[in-house]
Length: 271
Image (spheres, helix red, strand yellow):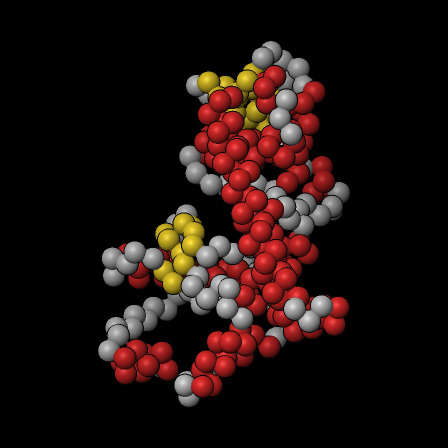
């Protein structure tokens, strides 16, 4: 293997692990999950402080576009982070995230480094490849620096998102008493902060990060704005929202009922 031979020439240990990619609607997503799981195991075995991956500014621009196409808020616009902690993986660092792909290719050419490209990167069967091969070139006709623009947009979104997260965390402390949230104070907040507060409450109820689509969150926010005491709403992961006279709580119980939007075939964006 090329990677093993290169590692040996540099005096670096190479660990090779074969993984099984489960069948999924998204083969690339399933492969990505299996790959990060293998990297996490290798990092633990080596007692490494972080996992470094080689995503470039071009990858960042493509991720921003993919998230926009799916429907996204600030979190999605922020795309990939330079340094983040990913649940189940550990610390993930992307030192080349602000470096254009053209620069990395020029570097390899200058130093005579052979480039090995996965042939699947040219297949238009995958949405990301179609974004890279078809959509980005069209956008470059409107703005030749579109890759830089999208990468800069992601940086700005990350900064703005961090501020809102800080505000939401502070409000979560102020509004939460034991397991109940002050309803009047919650209703006084802008909807964007209410949304973040509710997601924080979900994380607390489930003891960790969760991926919840926008529709149930928005419906729960509507209920919290106009609902009456003793009304309930079932969120995903078996979480029940219970309205009280001056407060509301989230608790484990019941199953999330069928989404109306989903049953009607409507797209449900993630926020």
